[in-house]
Each structure stands twice: as structure tokens, then as C-alpha cells.
Amino acid sequence: MPDPVKRPIALPLLIAACAAIIAMFFSLEIYPALREPLAANIDPDRLGDLSSNLSSGLGFVYTAHGRLVPAFDRGPLYPALVAAMMLVSGSRSFVPVQVFQSLLHGGTCFLVFLIAGRLVSRRGAIAAQCLAGLHPMLIWYTPRVWIETTHTFLVTLTVFMLMSLEDRPAAPRAAWAGAVIGITALAKSVILPFAAVAALGLGLRKERRLLPAAAALLGTALLVVIPWTVRNYEAGGRLIPVHTSFGLNRVQGDAIAENWSSMPFSTLEIWSKGKASIDSILAPSGEEPGSPAGDRILGRASVAYSLSHPLFALWRTAVNAITFCYLSESTAKSLFLAAVEFPLMICAALGARRLWRRGPRGRIPGLLLGYFVIVHMLIVGWARYSVPVVPVAIVLAVALFSLPVEESPPDA
Image 1 (cartoon, rainbow, N blue to C red):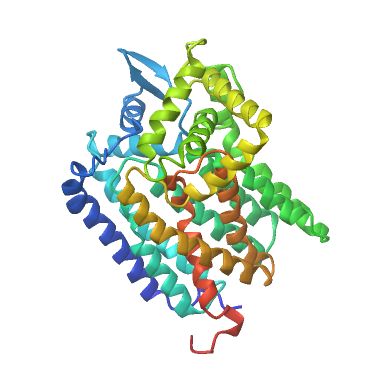
Image 2: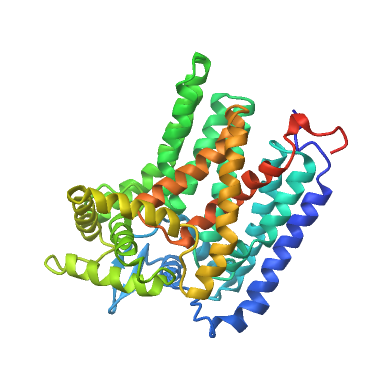
């Protein structure tokens, strides 16, 4: 099989650089003009406050009502990156973050080429890279202090590492892949169980030589995460692998299902309904949604309701699977995303089916995409949460229309 890394990469590198420049131009020139008309808050999750406190030596804490409160609702990786940029720049300006995220966007596009190059023709790989470089959802998050651009890069890197592992299965390579999964989990914990999925995929084969690789993959991923788990236990008194938010998102997923028929195109309206439910559930305890105890209360209440109302559980699962592809802040944005994402996801599903027959390497992108869809339809289906798998979906969609590597003409 041709290795895309060993083939001419001048053009893919140029495309990646162009993608970074486009994202940088959007971040520094276009986004400032759109920010107020679209009410696009640059830091809606208060990550700037968290990162500023971290860079000042105050710890992983929020500033709330004049006091410092330990943060449990965010993974440490992204705030640490933003804090490092604040230290280097000597200010709380978000411009270095925007430049960094634009460069990461370019890096993601290059990874798309490398991944697609292992599955389809060179022309197909170039096409996938171009589509990723111009995809509006990937560019939209580069100017904002949100985790999506970093998380997208790491998820795409995870796919590349797992595919490289399939090419030459060995414990050292598996350990590197596990480390990448662990680092990705420190950005957002949704990927962590996928380490077990990937390890099982290796360990359940009949070849005993793959068992050490499976153990190395899962073990390294857990070793990377465990120190932060210990921090959470010491600070909050509960076992939290990376961060809270399961309960909050479960209740918001309930709100999507309850209100989707009357509010199918606006997260803001549904979010307010979910916030009212969260406040009602937590009122007797006085806990905050992001606290360890508050998140546990919310999670238990949501799961208990689904178990006692199985038809609603089925409905919420189906609805959140649909909204995962398009539901955003406004009707216009939701309709735009629906027009872009539904065709992409349909083609990706068909492309995944085509690649599935070609063995373990071809199955990895489809497995990860399916994993993300299943996890979010069981928890909450905002379109924002689908961003990290957009590059993988693009690769799969291109695979539907492009010749597989083995079938490519010699000059492809």
C-alpha cells in the first residue's frame, strides 16, 4: 500500500498552509465584524477567566462572587494551552489563541490528507483536504475561545495514530496511540471509552501477538488521565475521570426531546427550558450544575426518568441523533448546517460501509464517527458537538466517490 507520507507532500502542505491563512483571516478580520450582529460571544464558557487564573498561579479555579471556586466542568488541557499563551504574550489578549487555532486548523487539514491517503487515491485525499480546509463549521470556531478547534485536531490525530497502529501493530506504537487518546480525553472526556473500544478491536483477534499492543493502548490512555482524576478526587471528594457535565448535558438532551416539535431550530430557546429543569432539580440541594454533587444529581434524575419512561428514552435518542447534525443558536444557522451536514453524514455513512469491507484500517474512521454519534444521541445532540468528527466524516464521504488505494491508477 502506498504511504502518503512518503509521496510528494508539497501540494498538501501548501493546502494546509492556505487553510490556516483562511482561518486566520476569518478570525482576525471577518469575525470581529460579525461578532456583535450575530451575538457570537468570543468566550461563552468563561475559559478566559479559568485560564487567566491558571496563568496567574491561582490554580484551576473560576472567579465567582469575589471568591475562587475549583473548576470541575472542564478538562485541563485547553485552559492550560490558553494560559500558556497568556504567559508568553504577557496579556489576556485572545489574538494568540486565534492564531494558534488557525494553525491547528491547517494541521487538521494535513492530517485529513494523511488519513485519506491511506484509504483512497491521491486525488481523493487532496479533495478531502480541500473540503476540510473550507468547511464552514471548522473555520467558525477558530476565532473563539472554545475547545472545538483543539479537540477536532486531537480527534483527527487519534484516527491517524490508530490507522498507523493497524499498519504495524506493536506495543510501542499502541502506547503512542493510547497517549494521544489520553491527551484528547484531557481536552474532553468523550473520547476516553473509545480507548477500550480500540483495545478490544486488537485484543479480540485470534493473533496473540496483538494482546500486548491492546494492553499498551488502554493502559497508556488511562495513565495519562489518572493524575487529573486524582486531582479531582482530592479537590471534590468524588471520582471524576476528567470533568463533570454529564448530568447537565443529559438534562439538556431531555429538553431537546421535550421541545423539539415546537422549537426545532433554536438551541437558545431549548437551552432556557433545560436550564429551568436544571434549576428545579438542583433547588432542594443548592448545588451548582458544574459541581461534582450537582452533576451527579442531574445525571441520576435524567437517567431515572428515562428508565421509567422507555418510550420517551427512545424518542430522546432518536431526536438527539438528528439534532447532533444541525441544531444551533438560530433558525438561519440551523437550516444552513442542516443543508451542509445531513448530506455529509449520509455520504459518510455510505462511505464507511464501503470501507468496512476492506479490513481493520478502513473501519477505524467509521467506528469513531459511529461512536461519537451514539454517545451524543444518548447524552445531548447539539451541532457544536459534531464538529470534532467533521474531518473524519469528510474522509468517509470522499471514500464513497473516490477509488480505493489498491484500485487507484498508477499515476493517481
